[in-house]
Amino acid sequence: MENIIVVLVIMAVFVFGYYVMRAVDRFLLENERRMTKEMEKRKPVVVRLSGNMSLEEIDKEIDKFRKDHINFEIILIEKSGMM
Image 1 (tube, helix red, strand yellow):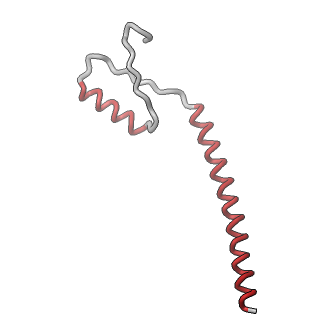
Image 2: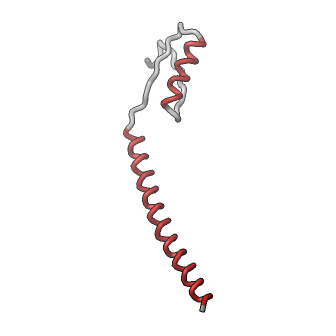
Image 3: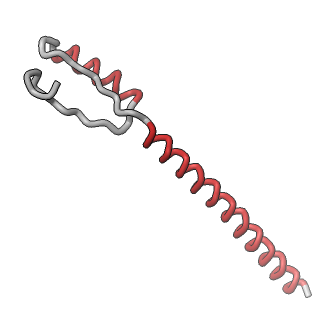
């Protein structure tokens, strides 16, 4: 008799865990969708560094930018070109 009760309790725990994890999964999926939409809405940020800056000044500016922006690219363009 005790074995049956133990089996029923374990089954109840598994069923409860399944529903809890399903709710957590839905929450995380919705949160990921919302964050993706938010990231798509963000405009690209541009930092212009003039050619007469020292390497230390450029390095400081890049470090400041890196603190606020995780995923970024550095693109170098000649002044007489695009900009």
